[in-house]
Image (cartoon, rainbow, N blue to C red):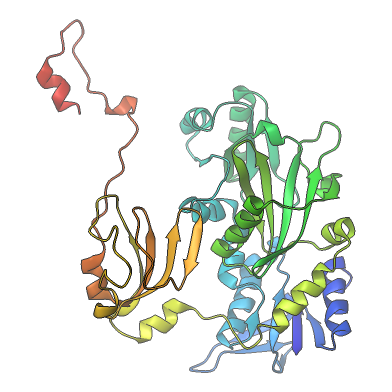
Length: 408
């Protein structure tokens, strides 16, 4: 296998270890500075030039894209994808995970634990937002901070308001997040490669520091994850579109809470803590998948006019409930059920005899006109009552039954 490592630093521990692991396994490997590429675009022939020379053919690349070059770095990865070169992490996955707000937005539609989070711009919305996440203390995060930089703990509502106002005055976008008290000063880093958690460690902050990052002086200890934590880490990486990821989780009373999914996790801390060959696991995974380049389904399906993929949500009152996939008539209408999502479980290529239950979600491929007829109408969620919803009533006047009905 001819492998490229997209990295700006030959001396970086992670880059060195990946190169060593690849060479030990007999692969040809070269470290390619991500900023030294030129992207050439012409009809039917996407191409890359490296240091002003046309890039030779590579079987796979491992992106190590730093936060400061996310835009250009993901453009280079995207070009490799168009050239049918296997990428350990997709450009979409890197973009999704790099922005804390975006990553939580993507995760929030799935049944996966996360601290309650809110994002506001108007300073008048700050106090209600803090109250919605449970009040002080709260965690305030910059959207694109790394290694614990830009993560602050506000002990009081007044200090939280002041911090948010200060950061916003500097044109910084911030998240306000619930503080999980029972996990103060510690978290879990699970290292995901493919469909396995190959290593895991607990990071513990020292002294008065509440951030447990190794770069902030946190200590580490190797841990064996329970099935719940392992499944959560794998699902988070999969939802983000990442094959290689560092998934950071808080140990909350009600189970694992996803804090962040890192697309370029460092190897030094996890390897020294666990004494495991994490770099080797990454190389082995890439080598076993070089014949399976990333496919953008949206691009491929657009060629087949009238066909596409959609998700069918099964409401509690549905004619599909109690029927099997076969008896529901999907195959008769040339609809393929690709996956079945049930609670926190994902069942790929479900059997025809699988019975459909309420709140299942079926990912289906077929004719879009037929799919539109099958998809049930959306049921509007009931909003929580708000002060803004209450009618203005005259002072000292009795409210009639009619007035009460009109306010509902």
